[in-house]
Image (cartoon, rainbow, N blue to C red; front, side):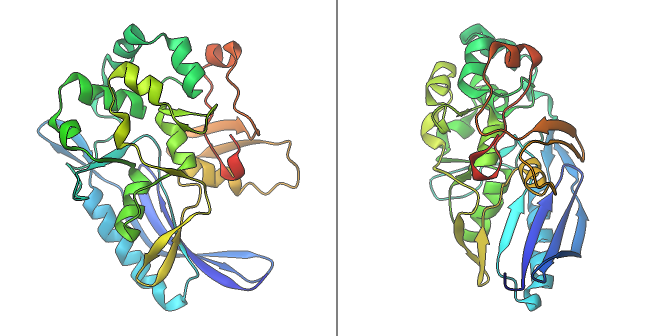
Length: 282
């Protein structure tokens, strides 16, 4: 394979970095271009990500790497959080942090409308109050005007990809973190959304990892596994399909990579999760 350099934008819940990844034909070499904190901001009692600060730091890092003539840019972030766009493509409010208290009692509210087992059967995702499902349900429960004017839902990395390219799409691996994706149909769980009063029409096309989204400053932007854990699993240095992994960052996750989601009653009882990887794996 030819030598090449790509730029990786990797955002965790505590810090972010823009890396140049050099491939010499047989080995990878990582060069840190720009590292920055991922801080929070409280406004009127709501815990937000400082998303515009992140965007500014991402642009700074990419600018530092442009002289390397990179072949592409890829973005990954933590899961579950999102932004909403209006019909003109403008961000409606700053993305809210998953640790904000707005999801209190939202799991119980969801179970009152749809049995827990049915939610798992339709999504295969671990039950945590931080999940996108309960964040969206909090907007429904509060009668948020944001939902009345929202035209497009984008997860955190998809929002950044939109700002880079103008593409309003959701990458597969990050879509699976929302608890609003149906792995049985490989699309949004619109039936579940309808049962919970979540507007399904704002959820965009889902694209696989490896999709070219457009370009930024003349550099192609290609969606990796936009969920950081999905990209971490893809990088596990193994020559066999039978392996387990531990991914440690802000969260520590233990898992297996499988070709089909596991949606059994035993999986529900164990509160395991089916999150997407590259090549359609979970």
